[in-house]
Length: 416
Image: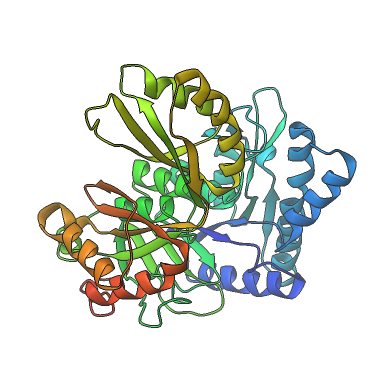
C-alpha cells in the first residue's frame, strides 16, 4: 500500500461531470489498496471570473480581500468532489487550507508555505477516507486566508506530499507529460519518460508551463517523486525524480522558449564603480525582476553599455523609470530596447560532461540566419535572446540538431 497525493487542475474539474470522472479515477486507485490525498484547483476560468468581479469593486483590489475571494473557487470543487465520492459509495472529507493548517507567511496573493499540520489528514486516512484538500490557499499565524499565486495548487500538492512523506505526487493536467519541446510548434516533440529535478527547474524557469517552479523546488528538497500525466488517458506520463547516471547520457533533454520578456539597453554609461548599483537598485525597489544582464567592455573612452531583460509587462514601466536614472548617472547614449524578443534555451544534465553544446546551438541559429543578441549559461542550460519572429524556426532547428525525437532514457520499473 502506498500513500499517493494526486492533484487535478482547473481543466480536469471544469464542470460537475468532470469532477465525477476525477472521483472515479481516484477511487480506482484507492481500490488498489492505496491511501489517497487529492488536491484540487478551482474550475477552469473561475479565478479569472472572480478577479473580474473584484476589479468592478476597486481599481486596485485590496490584497487581503482578494485572497478571501479567490480562495472560494477551490472550496466549490473540493466540496463537490467529496459529494461525488460519497455518491459512489465510498467516504471522503474535504479540507480548506485553514482547516488543514497549511501555514504560510502573510504575503497576500503570493504567499509561501512555511509548514503543514498533517494530523487531521493522517487521522482521516487511517479511518479509510479519501482526503481532498483545496489547493492554492493557506492561512497566516493570525488566521487570515492567503493564496499562493498562479500555479499554487501544484505547490500545495507537492508540499503535502513532502509533509506526509508520500510515496509519490501525481500532477494531472491536460497534457500527457513533459515534452522535449512545445508539440504545438514542433511535430517531432516526444514525451520524456524521466527527467531530473534540476532539468525540470530550468525548464519551468525558462518558460515551460507544465509545472510551477515552486513545486519542483519542494520536490527536490524533500525528494518527492512527481508524476506528470494526463487526466484524460491512462498513459504513463513523465517522472520528475532525482538525477541518475542514465540521465547524464542524454546531453540535451529539451528546448524551451519564453516570449514574456523584453530587452533594455542603457548606452554610454560611465565605466566606474557603483554605476550598476545606481541603475538596478531603483528597478529592484520598484519590484521589477531583472533576468539576464550583459555589460560591454570599455573600449577606451570610459563608457560602456548595460543590457538586461525584464518581464514584458514591466517593459514600459522600466523605460520610464530609467529616464530619470540616465540623467543622474550621465548615460550619454540614453535608453532603448525591444519587447519583440524571445529567450530560447536548451537544457540537459549531460551538458556538464560534454563540450561543444553551446557552439552547436550558436551554429544552428547562425545557419538559419537568426541573430543572437544576448547569451546566458549555467551548468545545464544555454539561453539566447533572439527576435520573436524567429521563435518557431529556432525551436524546430534546435530540436532537429540535437535529435531530441530519438533520445530518451531506458525504461525503468514504475515507481507506483
